[in-house]
Image (cartoon, rainbow, N blue to C red; front, side, top):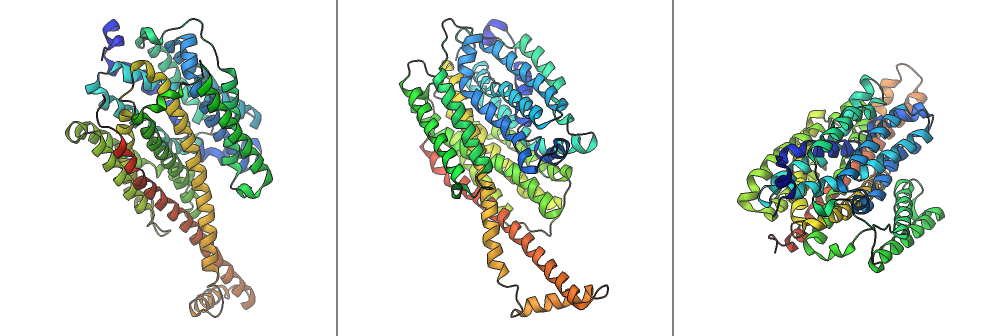
Length: 512
């Protein structure tokens, strides 16, 4: 492969990776860094916890809308110029997020941040594919994948520490110095090949862009609020979902029929790209959902602080680091597909290990399954990102990255929503199963309530002590049923990893 960038500019591609990965890390970090700080932000803006989740979803929706338009803006401004614009918008928006004094202001700033960040990931992925020859691409994509996965993992821990040490605005202010550094290094080190420079007579698919916005916005509303509203038991959820599906059909119809669409869907005809993207959608759904529910489980069921619950994700980062080294060493020896399948098996085992946890554990007991989870995630995701695009030309990379990242974002949103619903439903099922045993016909229940009532009666009358004993047992039941909801959800994560293994077998090992 002709390396246009390095031939013209004589720059080591690993040096070019520095500002590229710095930008990627900032964007991916902000997907999860707000998670543990939401209670503090809700208090600052006098809103409920449910309302505060829009701080996260507004960012995801805005970036999701922009991703398919990256190819258009890259042609309109030139890819390097658009990269610089994206980093600038993201950095300015980060300042506005930290300065926000109302819910309206933070939502505006987060949407602006998502608009800026949406262009970073696809452009970075395309640049990395171009600047490295094929024999070094696997190692480069391992570093890229490490940043994509590590940043969301580190987000809760870093966000919890910044929030407790200083205050929540610093989870956004931290982007500013890195954004400035990335801007100057991109300007100095990154250069466009001919096909990525500013083009004339570039047209915008306004109708496609409109239906894309409607589709993703309404879909995100359904995913965010569906569980609280009992999903399709609520008329407004049914209507909103219908609008979303009609907008999605209209969007894809326009993309297929229009001569100059917003995104070129013909790229999905490539078998490697199509099946590889499906696998990546599932992996992103599992990764983002698990990153959201594990800290939540530790905070709600075990009383962990925001920092400690975020810290629980660090062993997963250790697994990611080990997997990155393993990818570099094993790929030349065993090939890409065996490595992906091995990663999926390890990821599945990690999910099943999480399915064995209980409330009588310490933070260290979360470390091993979390490390296994991170090890399998990287071993599967990084080689798959490389393999899925291996049969595409350089000219197709920017568009391919846009399509793939759009679908991965959608997979992450769906995965997180499905996980939340599964926890709620499984908890209800187990609560119904267990509550039937809380009656005086059960010898175990009678013995337990008499024992607790005897200890409480030292400070109150027998009737009150018996009532207190019953409430304590019921609270334990609620805790156990909630734990079962999380446990079974983690088991389904493991099952999902095993189910997608046949898709990997369909993909060709070598490019034509």
